[in-house]
Image 1 (cartoon, helix red, strand yellow):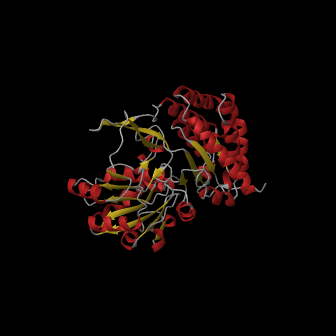
Image 2: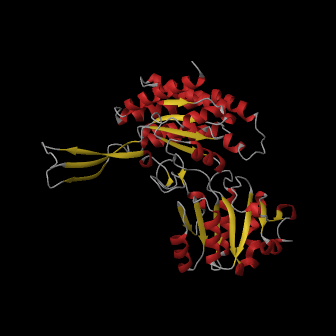
Image 3: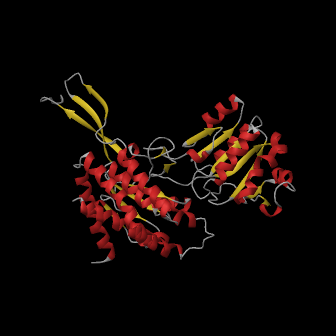
Length: 420
């Protein structure tokens, strides 16, 4: 049997396992998730040893290093997140609509799983836990294609998950981790009939690769080219706090700030606006008006003149660009040109500016006077997320349990036939 044939056989097994998940009651699913969370402390040494093997192959200066890193605190947080998912209400079998037609047919629209969800992702072994817990809670089987940089970590995590499934008498084929080699991704992306939807999580390059090569439907998530517009009416102290938080809280995540857009009337305040960033050694690429306002006021070694490539870039590190605009219209044009439609923010006191910005910006999450770091399933009160969808079909924004469901119509009759 070739490797291709072996993978297809495993995908068939996942499809069969997915049919059994819908028969599980909520207690069985929640019990499995709670046991998985309880087993993480005992498996910490094994998982961290595998993670160290992955880390040894990556330069610590690489922006992906922090995403790859696991430690005891992060594993404890993961276990807590899994318990939180178990505690959430089931999204399945929810009645969305009900009515009786004039001919007596009874119609019910109820939520059902998507089926088999394929996740292709990079560098983030925590995603392996997150995705499985969300998929199982929503009645879905899981096919994972992690990157080679996290191969050892992902193998250790999936072995733990399969062990817990077997211990509870459940089909371990509810989860399948594909080989780390790139060839396996092509098989996954074309597994029509075995996988119902592909969700890529990672860089824009990964998302573009999935969209280009997949014959399975794709929901785009993850890439965040994020802007914050500081209007001429913006409050300086508020702006300082928001910009600092949006850029430095976790620069390697998709909701981190990439480009600060500044109204030209506030250039005299720019040095004060970005001053807190010095503490975290944030490198700034400023357009000409901003550069000359910051020269001598921001550390020379951290300030450069911006080039075209510094706009429309997801930095994923302690770097950001600054764009100067004459008015709101120019700010909106810049965002429309470069945004990945993830998260965008305005800092303003002028209510007309706020209303225009929030109405006209096309993004999954649009903020007024708040940090874009809140674009997160847990922060939105959804419990957790499988990713941030940047498209408009099926789901948009944080994809939590409800977004991992579809629906079907249940039609009840009493012998009705449709007239010719």
